[in-house]
Image (cartoon, rainbow, N blue to C red):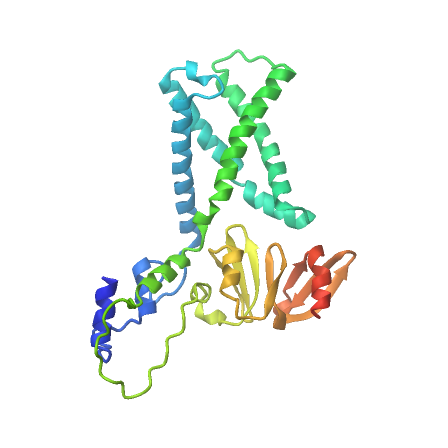
Length: 317
């Protein structure tokens, strides 16, 4: 369909009535993420609901696999019991462990610690209520007895292995939460005519054709009233808050992906969760060992301790 569209446009370049969209607009409409009349990104609530649905589907599959494997001595139980218990544990574990990424990010930023350390700490703490839940369910219908230290330690270790392993799995594949706008980029790229196709003769235009700018998913996801003067990017979980000279907007995109789309702007990553445009820096404030850059509109961007000396050498502060 995309190839037929491109072929038609090549043969009918002066027919805006029958083909009013540009390739960029048509590709965005095809993805269902934006439309020429309404370029707003999908609502955050809808994106979150879709993410939870996908995550719970994955957790259900993991629970079914564990039920058939029957680890940690559960294979002796009937299959029906294993299916119900392991799928239930999978869903309960998702509710307990899923906030870990956001908490680990905030701790890492607040304490200036490596994210892998804060992630391990939060997994270790979250395993405590999960281990208690597993003990209560496994001992149904009772009576319950307070376990010995050795039994409690072994059960905690088993739960930590499973819970930590699944959490690490989700952390490694969180690329699936990559910006939905990147799908628009892919389709827009597909919309370009193939170099392998034979050239089609077209009437020479009356005026020189103005080359269409390359699509930028980050700018495309911003409301028109915010403009395109990006001064900073701030990571918020799986989102990035794009600060412009006129306001800010949340975009479903990882910070490292967003920085690719501002590569033509003179700026740099000043912190694990911040990228700053150099031209937006108005002042630098120091509070003990902590340094913050004051940007336009009163925005303050933190500077990691490892970046302080580099910013000084570059003349930022």
